[in-house]
Image (cartoon, rainbow, N blue to C red; front, side):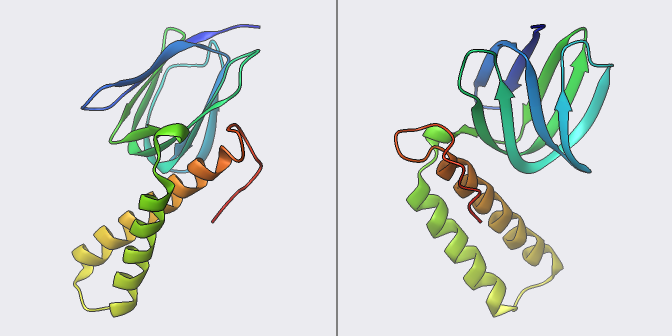
Length: 147
């Protein structure tokens, strides 16, 4: 099966670097699948789950907090605002962040900018919980779609 190079980078670190068979990313207009020899592309990403398929291995699932994706010369480069592998996510902390964001949204005592920030925090915490819960018992995909 054909492969392409995939690199996922944040300001803090290189999160992932390997040859892969497919990348599924949360584009601003919905999920997008990138296969080897994909046409050149640059697009914005939103908060969501990023999945990397590599033949013969378990999928790698990550929670990303938006960013950009570039496809060029059989290489996918993702410049993410944040990126965490499923095993790096502290599920209790993500649940606490979700609870705090939901409580803040109920208060309704802030301007549009503050509302957008709280809403974004809620979306990030929901994505983190979804990705963390995919590990399931013993790791890997448990089929839990979560929230």
